[in-house]
Amino acid sequence: MPFTPTRAETHALQRSADRVALRIIRTCRIPRHEQEDLRQDLLTDLFARLKGFDPARGELGPFAAACFDHRAIRLTERILRGRATMAPISLDDPQPGGEGLTIGDSVAEADGYGAWLGQPTDAFAAAERRIDLDRALGTLPAETLPLCAELTERSPHELAKASPTSRATLYRHLRELRLRLLVAGIPATA
Image (cartoon, rainbow, N blue to C red; front, side):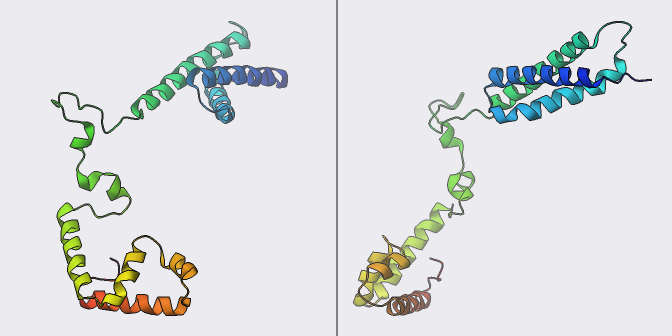
């Protein structure tokens, strides 16, 4: 029959697991709110090993302390190893064996931060887009150019708040501007 600890032994095991969990927290410099999860992990490991405990060969306290210490070592190693793989590096750090190249030089534009944010990543497509916009701006009437210049610095909402014209008039001008750009070959998402 497997060993079952008494209520008093269970409380003593929980206090001991709390102390070991705090030691892991201090060693690994992790937040204090992780203590409960660590304590649960330690106790789960101990209870899985209780089938190997023989009260005739020793007391529960030293057996539990040995189990907690072994599990704590494994948890600490796992936490520190995971932290080491996630160490921040700079794009300006030299690339190992790169003869003056930086880590940023090895990151393709399509894999960079801008791609994660949904920005266009093709430099040629961006240059072509800029040329198309310049050509389209040349076809617009002169009275719409100040509105275009304002839109490069402020949102339509900000313009409507600051403008003496009504919001409806501003949005009508924006709709006409979008149509003119669409005729010039620039879709509304530009």
